[in-house]
Length: 85
Image (tube, rainbow, N blue to C red):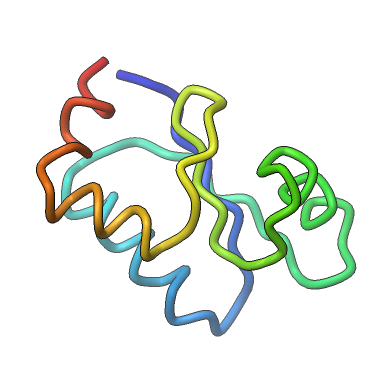
């Protein structure tokens, strides 16, 4: 199973939705607390190529974007192959 990392912040409904989807799928992941102004947030911005929103989701080190992109991958059937690699 690939390494999944999700940068989140408290009280973010998009973060909660992304985390919930991964839990429902039974995918192990690392949730990284990345509130605005934190070192973790700066790391997420750098790793994602400049995206400042949360969540920021990485599968095997590759940025897939945020919640909308994750849900689009799920809707189009492209998420499971990424998670099965």
